[in-house]
Amino acid sequence: MRRPFIAGNWKMNLDRAAAIALAEGLVKHSEGKVGVDLAVCPPSVYLDAVGRVIAGSKIALGAQNVYHEANGAYTGEISVAMLQDLGCKYVILGHSERRHVLGETDAAINKKVHAALKGGLVPIVCVGELLEEREASKTLEVIRRQFDGSLAGVSEAQMKTLVIAYEPVWAIGTGKVATPAQAEEVHLDLRKILQERYNKGVAEAVRIQYGGSVKPDNAAELLAQPDIDGALVGGASLKVDQFLGIAAGAPK
Ligand code: 13P
Image (cartoon, rainbow, N blue to C red; front, side, top):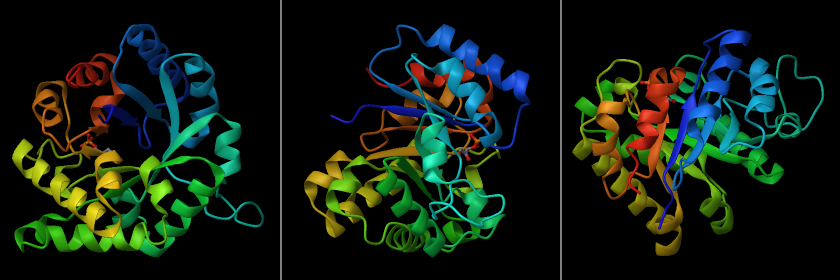
């Protein structure tokens, strides 16, 4: 049985005071929430402050990116050890905004995945197709290419610990959510890829989140799908009631 996992990707939003206030609200109102794993991924400059607020609560800390090298002359980059120093458990890798706005390649993402796994962070690896790729019936092809490129060389034991997020690019920040059937179809494809590349045990163990305009009013139906194990939430993770409303939609 895969435990539902709801993570908030705050992206490049909020200021320090708002980030702390959001974290405080989440801690206060998430007490007693059982049966679901929760995480927040603030901007890197607020990881320390937010980490202090959520320490000891049921909310885990995640980062939105990391660099694959351990240390050295990499101006502006942040290492796995630095994120761990701040109490991070998770790191989002290969988000579509990093792929499509910042030009990150599968090869670069793959290096980050290995660095994170080696250092003990849990990667949340994002895959997802553009609208034109979906319209050209290339969704599965894109997902396979991103899976094979971003996750090359990941061992069976490592794969079982990792989280995959399916985020169709056309549904991110657009209010245009994939229907539960559209999302479930791709999640099932991802599970088939896991079975082909690894085995049934791995396919059954890996948690696959859906991301793209998840809101409290559509979460329950998405999360009720057999292969959707959680949500990676953008806009709605910036409001306590919305984020926890989504978590409340997870099957018990
Ligand atoms: P929205 O929930 O704002 O569509 O963002 C989804 C996302 O990109 C989460 O990583």
